Length: 251
Image 1: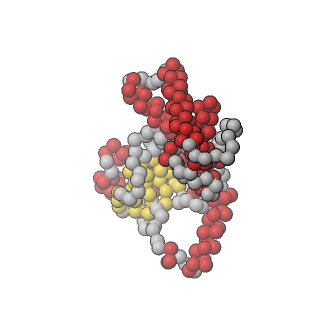
Image 2: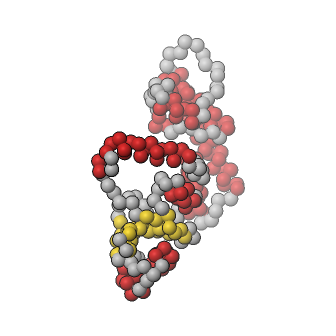
Image 3: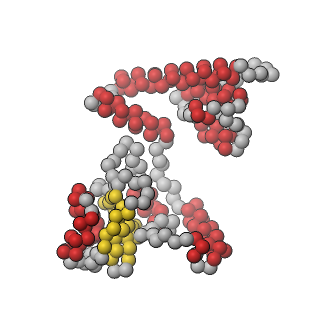
């Protein structure tokens, strides 16, 4: 690879990322010249995405942005799994320490141009779904409560200037529990004002997953007295056991 041509192409890359991008391109392309490097602004990534053209082939270089508490720690393993299954572009290079990946660039094409027309497109989608179903499960993503916990830890750390100790974490857990108890009282007080054929002495409550499924399937409807009553039980259960609870927007 001619050093001058690569250095010229890399001029569009911010200096902070230039060397890691250079190392990635040399690892993938070897001595092949780089014809052009173009930043891509599409998408919501906080990092940098580049389109690299070399010998009539196009590659996508992805550089992570600043790492936050919400970063998915298994993204590169998942990227490899998807690529090996043929449901994502081929991955040529990964530098997890520096947050850099190089893969084939997927050109955008309208679905109406798919070879063979709609029938062939539907068949291809079916085959894609089959490969997806056969693909190993990606490592677990962070559950919403854990995401909130990470944000809470980041907030506490910024406030204290240090990591929160066990005593403060225990106080926070108590505050969270009493908050759920308070809202259990609010919700059950509201549902108590609705007519009921008989007293309800059963405090059992569905899990958050079961409740969300009931909302999707229409077995519970937002804003109804029964849904408010069930949510009150869930918040009471959350106070007693720490179980996840639905957001109050459901009412």
